[in-house]
Image (cartoon, rainbow over all chains, first blue to last red; front, side, top):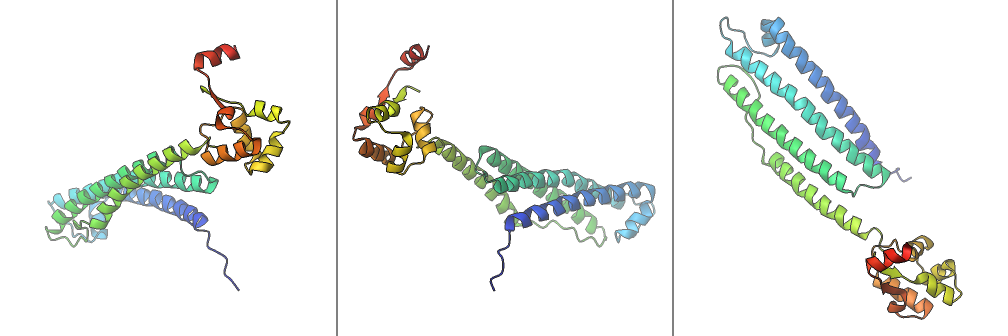
Length: 174
Length: 76
């Protein structure tokens, strides 16, 4: 018996819906943690594995900075994912090769670039905190693959734009 | 568009319908209709060849260049 083919498109749509919800949930969690870091700083620091030292505000400020940067990442991720969802939706409708989708791909590329820069900033703060004797596992790890992905997205957006223009040219050809 | 498609006239001269032409040349009725009404943006050589073969005519019999001002005056 032949197994039915997996509908990758439907699967992607469902996965995107879940990831969008998870991102918003993560945002709510980080916001709650950030607010709690002001209301009960010692408790939050201990929960993060950082031993609070009386009179040392650098660690708390560093941790809050990481949370703040994490919060900034949430709308950026949402921006990227919702645009990706629109592209997937256009594939479902059967009309993905349009200039609007190349613009969306460019927006995704800018979004991913922004996320990479945020990643670098969070890594820098994490590294400086970890050097102060805090067991944080947020390091400044630069990944060639992720930067290549950003480059690839920009190139793909341009290729898509050219393809969409060529397709528009063919429309009306008898 | 300054290019005029005279498919209607040729069909009339040959007492042929668009449906019959569509069956002969293997081009959809919708596409031939786009061509006939002057809404086409481009014509493939293969399409031109098939229509000329079916209607026994030259590409020049099918297409004409009419400057925009004349076209406007005509349609007015």
